[in-house]
Image (tube, rainbow, N blue to C red; front, side, top):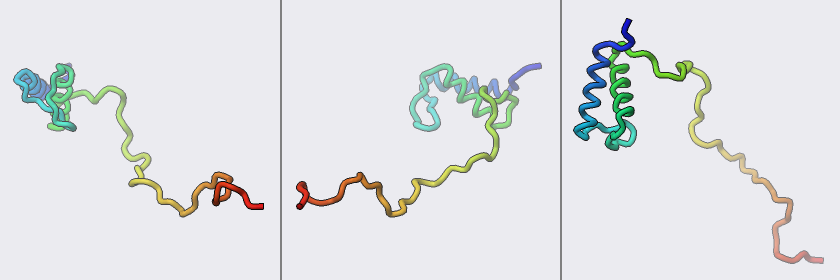
Length: 94
């Protein structure tokens, strides 16, 4: 039985043609794609989104849920670490 469906084949074919023409752009940065492997990966990911028969990405599937990301930095409590020295001038008074 075939691993990939016809829709996946056509998406990859279109991505490869766009790469050859120089019009294929990557998703995040929008830069031109020059790599053959990257063009194939873009075609397969588009096919996955379109619901084509494509095996899952290698490396195992990520579990849904899990640990939530915290939004931003933790708030300061107002205390600072002391270096062990007292604040003041350069000399000690006797």
